[in-house]
Image (tube, rainbow, N blue to C red; front, top):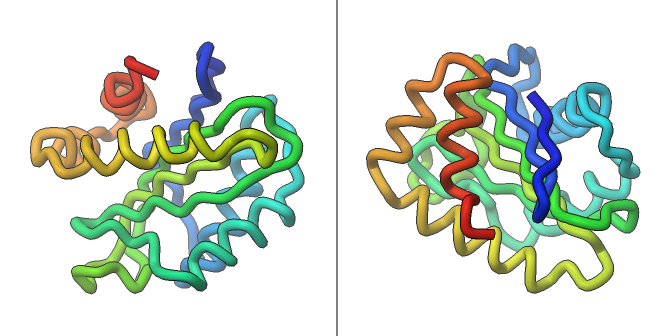
Amino acid sequence: MFEEQDALFLYINANVDTQQQSKEGILKEVLKLIQESSSVTFDRHEVYRSVKEREEISTTGFGEGFAIPHGKSSDLNKPLVAVMKLAYGVDWEAMDEEEVNTVILLIVPEENGEAQHLKLLSKLSYNLMDDEIQKAIREAQTDKALHSTVQAMFTEL
């Protein structure tokens, strides 16, 4: 499910059935999936490199089964938030050493995207500390149910 909101692009996929077993493989597949399933155009390789560079600094494995990888794109004019639930958990080197089964990918514009980037990360981090939101994301079985939960997290952007 893809939606263009005023402040951002939002891509939701409640069941990514992939055979990838590494975060690098997941990231490549997810970027390809977003590109093929939405009207947003960006250079997948540029975004992958940006996300990979960020991962090399420290893991984006948030804990509790969530990862928040993030990168930049010179092609975007507003942020893209992609939330995907993986059919199988993957080792993301998360701080709690748990496998990740929900990936929340942030892609912000390269130009003047820092403020948006920090605002999105702050909003996500704050909301993902809430047990009820974690539970709602985990229990969402459809794109529509997941979209409803995620959209509520970003209503004040």
